[in-house]
Length: 189
Length: 189
DNA sequence: CTAGGTTGCCTAAACGTTTTAGGCAAACCC
DNA sequence: GGGTTTGCCTAAAACGTTTAGGCAACCTAG
Image (cartoon, rainbow over all chains, first blue to last red):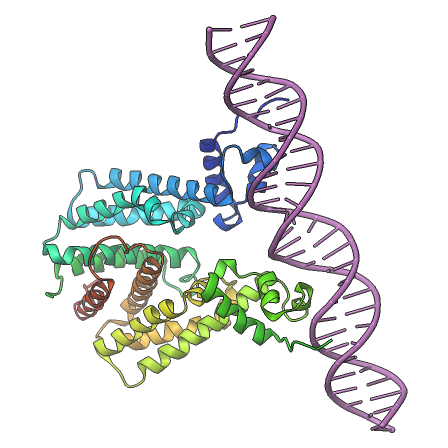
């Protein structure tokens, strides 16, 4: 019986693609097995269970996003960096909706601490270097930026903006303008 | 055989409570039947299928949030209204995490248009009445507010802020300060 | 108050997903 | 080439979803 050459990495990769195709919540061990032309039980040698598979996909997505963000931030500062960083979120979510949804999976604290999520936080802080915020305000600004990016992208992806007329592209540009303005004129505590 | 008195409304209500208890994605027709001390098949006379049940819970949650928001906005304006409106989101999500997650369910366009989601959009616009934004900028501001509130709440709920030190309460207050400041000094297009 | 129709919950059964246990053969390692 | 490891298999149990069909409880009209 020919071997299919399954590995945890390959399953994770295929799972990520599957998520983009049919949605993260419909990624199933069975479906993945079907794609590999293999019996379901075979996957359980490589992946502990369904939850494990999902977590792996989530971690991979976080890595990918962090890599993109790092690349985008290189050699940029101020509004330029802000816009590039923001675009990473949005573009990633549009190109890979399933992976983006995966990245939102709630991880247990230790997994989260070891994940690329912390790289994200560091990079958000790096964006703020281009603005003149007191140290004590930086946490709040980091959280605000995270909220806006995540919130915007997830509403746009979920169709929350789809009805009314104006292009979301325009709103996105205006959102970045607004954030830039806000960071330059951050209200005193 | 005594009747349990099931109705779609009662199932929806119980489903919402179940969601808050165990998480929206773990709400299942079987579990609901168990709670009512009834066989699974019995529920299918009241609810088309699992998806239908979820949708009903989502719509109910949207109604509840819209009601709360309407109540919060009555007699308030400016930053006062902004803060009250924002708190509705946050408080609802903290009190009813399962329902809040349900409210994020992607609805098909016609269901969305008929839902209380549109009331939300109208109320967000009402908040802006306290600020002096040109008509053409209002859509963008509405979307920005929606993004921040949803993004913040969903990150906080997902534990995204839990690690680092400062109280999220403080960040929340600073976020509202920042939004108020931003709306008062909205950058010219 | 009873006969007829309607409704509500039931049993039964098919199907899909998850997960564990144990087996056989391919691959690898000297 | 022989022994070990590894990878995929079959089998099977447990659970959620969903449909079909039945019987008894409830409601309504005479």
